[in-house]
Amino acid sequence: MKLFKNQKLTLYNSFSKKKEIFTPIHDGFIGMYVCGPTVYSNVHLGNCRTFLSFDLVFRYLKHLGYKVRYVRNITDAGHLENDADSGEDRIAKKARSEKIEPMEVVQNYTIDFHQTMEKFNALPPSIEPTATGHIIEQIGIIQEILKNGFAYEKNGSVYFDVLKFNETHHYGKLSGRNLEDMIANSRELEGQSDKKNPQDFALWKKAEPKHIMRWPSPWSDGFPGWHLECTAMSTKYLGEHFDIHGGGMDLKFPHHECEIAQSEAFCNQNPVNYWMHANMLTLNGQKMAKSTGNNILPNELFTGDNTILSKPFSPTVTKFFMYQAHYRSILDFSSDALEAAEKGYNRMKEAFKNLNTLPTGKDSTMDISAWKQSCYDAMNDDFNSPILIAQLFEAAKFINSVKDGKASITPSDLEILKTAIHSFVFEVLGLQEESISDTNSTKLSDTVALLINLRKEARENKDFATSDKIRDELTAIGIQLKDGKDGTTFSL
Ligand code: AMP
Ligand code: ZN
Image (cartoon, protein in one colour):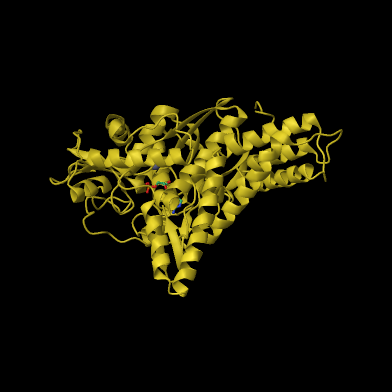
């Protein structure tokens, strides 16, 4: 295997449940598929965490010099309300409640998703295919699975025959579930009587008369099952066997388990070499989710227009906060954690600003090449961004010491340090060079905090004319004060 930048990358494969040395199928090239958003509402911060985790993976693989084809889909049909085969299509439901076309829903939230990813400085994928753009491919795969005997048609719908498949293959090998246990714990659900067994899943669903998103097929006017789109799009753009498949932990079962079964039933090929799953962002100890309302939207965070945080936070600080945790750890979102991340980020940034004016000497009191390798070691160890950030803090400490005359660095080591910091901060972590506006945003927060205190004092002195003036004039320039039981906060 050819080594890139002389680095040996290992990653945790959720399939083998082990860290493995990464070897691409084709030397120098990597095919990576990540399940994209279902565009029926704004992406929340939890969704963003998963997409930013894979942005980090994409960026590091590119940094090492691989040619990466990164496919991330848009789910614009087929994802039903309950993640299984019943309920209404999420997009059709939203279209009906808002009295607009389903494709208007798709357009609105696809734009929101792209704008959000841009604010976070996430790179666009190489291909961003849609489920509705690949109905023909999905029908083709269903025909093959039927021909191979692993699916059956009933009343215009086609179901994957999980029990039949499990006679010759293993259903449950990714999630570690056992079909016998699943059968023992299941009960037939009302309205699913077309299925031979509750474990079977839909490849094609006949559309009820009121279902607005429908396409002709050999079986009925209907729509594809949710799991099928990812098999169709990954196979089309990356082949029947590709390197990396990613998504949030909650997609492992049933979505990814079903993808494996579909591929094996379609072309007798386990499709993926390395499965990667990002862990959940939680709020109040519970998973952030669209359905429960336990979430915060990126824009609510950036403007401060929310009831959770005391002030706005920039996309860069939010991303820094996320990367201070490893992608496989649960991360809880809170005001304190974000404030700590902001302080740390500003400290690091202030130190790095001195790089261009740092004095040089005859020798270096820190081994810069060893430090640089430790940054690579962190990323080579399953993309360990918290360790990488800890190494960047070490560099910041050293830079401050050189500035204060307590440490020294040679001109050539300074060049190595500058290039490495630039690569890891901007290329790999993808933090933005928004240093000026970031510093301004900190200054703005401090200034508003000062005015909030003056207003509090005025109110305590019953000088309501002054306290109202402060509030009204801030409102006039677009800064809204919010009085709550824990004090006053602001939003832009
Ligand atoms: P969806 O739009 O619901 O299909 O979700 C898009 C992506 O976000 C999937 O990979 C999910 O696994 C992921 N996701 C959903 N909720 C969270 C969360 N609270 N934390 C991290 N990732 C999440
Ligand atoms: Zn998927």
